[in-house]
Image (cartoon, rainbow, N blue to C red; front, top):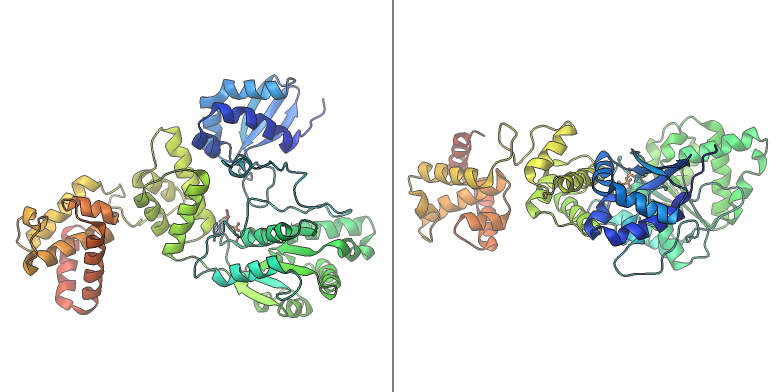
Amino acid sequence: MESVLPGQDLWLRILEKVEIEVKRPHFLTWFQNTAILSFHDGLLVIGAPNIFAKDWLENKLGAQLLEAVKTVYPEVREIMIEVDPNLGLPEDLRGVDVTKFFAKEKKPRKLPGKQEVRLLEGISSKCINPKFTLQNYVIGPSNRLAHAASMAVGMSPGSIYNPLFVYGGVGLGKTHLLQATGNEILRNDPDKVVVYMTSERFTNEIVEAIGKRNSKDFKDRYRKVDCLIIDDIQFLANKDRTQEEFFHTFNELYDNGKQIIISSDRPPKELNELEDRLVSRFEMGMIVDVQFPDYETRLAILHAKCRQHEILIHAEVLEFIATNIHDSIRELEGVLIQAIAQAQLEHSTPTVRSVAKIIKKLGRDNLQGMDQQGSEVSRGLHSEEVIEIVARYFRLPSDELMGESRKNAVLLPRQVAMYLLRNELNLAYDQIGKEFGGKNHTTVIHACDKIDMRLKKDKNLLRDVNSIKKEMGL
Ligand code: ADP
Ligand code: MG
């Protein structure tokens, strides 16, 4: 019997049934980026982006899900859930973004296929994913310029910044930015034709066109395109024929005032395997980079993703993730999603310990905010120990250290203790305040800043703090 792909519309109709039955945070977490993969002989295969989602859907929902499926699609006798890690990748458009389609404020739903993107004869990839917007792109010093340039292009494509060239390392938000700019152009003018594709896809189209012997009018296909977005242009390296076609397409669009947006893992002048004439075209426009975000931006991104998933997570846990993930925003997001998924399976909330385990699986050791054995520094016990060690070191009773005295001989040790709890145990400010008999978090911030500053100048204090750290086994 023939396999058919029933597509997103059907899945959305099924999800509408399920949505009523399932608690909202669960629904948003577990159905995010799910899709129907195939239907064959009465068996409907549903794709989930990770094992946690699969487990939850099978174990917690099994029968209910089949019910919902059957009401919409009576031919189904059986369902099966399969993990497909590609679901949810920015390039993969099969998965349903439930946070968008099932947003709280009920906007009229736009079904995919009928979405903003207009289709053009002969071009098979127009993939703009509506989940990437310039509005949900968190801005920080690492990407401010890139965001501003994208916004300008989104408002007036084909005029000032043409081409727009965005470069930066893997997982730093290039694809998000490119797609968001495409969406912004469409938001401002739904009649515009925006085409997004990876350079691999572009290459495939050219190879196909060559195979069909109609490559000579390849560039004509793009005549009606108002904005052409090519992601990861570095993959055109050494593909001479593709570069040649791209060069002509580029010129055609450029000469007609159409917008071109390109991304790459490096700046144009380092694209050594690309023809010089192409590189010099790229240099005609605006070149911006995205860098790895600083701690504050990483934290802001985590908060934004929690809001997007309508999930509450302890500030301390988010701080722990932001402190320990150094390579990419994709990884940052991945750890967060896994943490949420796992915690929900276990009916708990993510803790520093559970998140640390996930990060360790990525091959990270030496996590900050963890003790030598790599287990979570148990807040209650260990903060008491630290206070005890500090008090002993300064020859004070620990209840005096935790008390109210403003005498310098007590105040300084107290501030050192707060500083160590913050920097070595990674406790949140308000948590530290609580440890010290309910002091305000601003007191703690002040204490930490003060010690931080003094350590830069005061050699004696530095020695004291280092000795205490040794006592703590650091
Ligand atoms: P790249 O294309 O550079 O490899 P992506 O655009 O695929 O990176 O980004 C990886 C993930 O991180 C995506 O899910 C994206 O939405 C998210 N992301 C990256 N930068 C930001 C940002 N500034 N704000 C919010 N999310 C971001
Ligand atoms: Mg990308």
